[in-house]
Image (cartoon, rainbow, N blue to C red; front, side, top):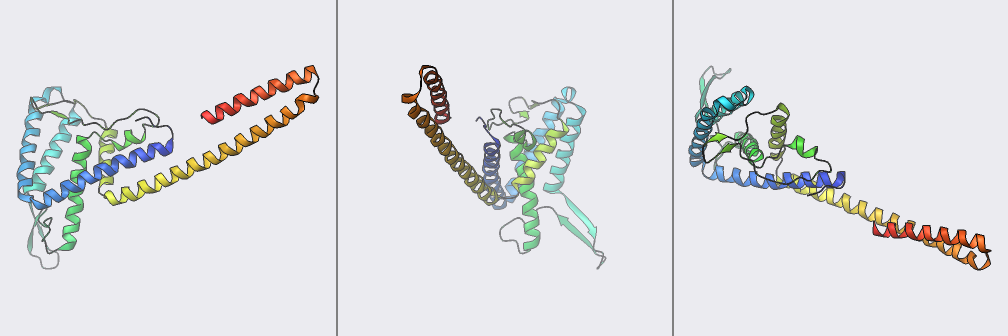
Length: 256
C-alpha cells in the first residue's frame, strides 16, 4: 500500500490497529472461555521458546537472550504462579493467583476488569509480534510502501530463532502496539470513521478549489480570445501563446 499523504498514513495506521484489536478481542474471549486449556497451551509454547533459546544460544545477542529469559519467567509466573502477601489491615497472608477472575462468571467485577485489561495487553503484544506491527516503524513509514505481514521470531521447523538481535526502539514499538490494542476495536472504529470523514471533507475542499481555479482559467482564456479579432499580428501571436499556456495549465489541473 502506497501512502500519498499524512491523512492516508493515519488512516492506514488506525486500520491496522483496528484489525489487530479485533483479533486481540477474539483471542481474549477465547481465553476467558477456556482458561485451563489456555494455561497449558501457554506453557507448551513457552517450552518451545526455551528450546529455541538453547539451540540458538551462540548466535543470539545478549539483549535478545535476556529479553527471552525475562519473557519466559514472566509467562510461567503469570500462568501458574501464586503470590503471598500480608494484608496490612488484618495481618493475614493472602494468596494472589494471576488471572483467577477472567472467567465470565467471576463475581469480583473490579478484579475481573483489571485482569482482562492485563490479559488484553499480553495478547496484544503477542499479536503485534506475530504480525510484526511495530508502531514506531509503522508511523515512520510515511510515503514508503508498507504491507501487513507475519514474522514469527522462531522458525517452527527446527525451533531456532530467526532474529539474532533486537533494538530497544523495536521493543518500544511492540510495547506501544500492545498498549494501544487494549483500547478496543470500538475506539479504533470510531477514530477511523473520524479520519475518513476528515479525508472526505479535505477531498471535497480540494475539488471545490480546483473547480474555482479551472473556472478562473477559462475566464482568462475567454477574455484573451475576445481580444484576438482586434489585435495586430504581433499582439495576436502573444495572445495565442498565452492562451496555449492557459490551456496547458487547465489540462494539468483537470488531470491532477
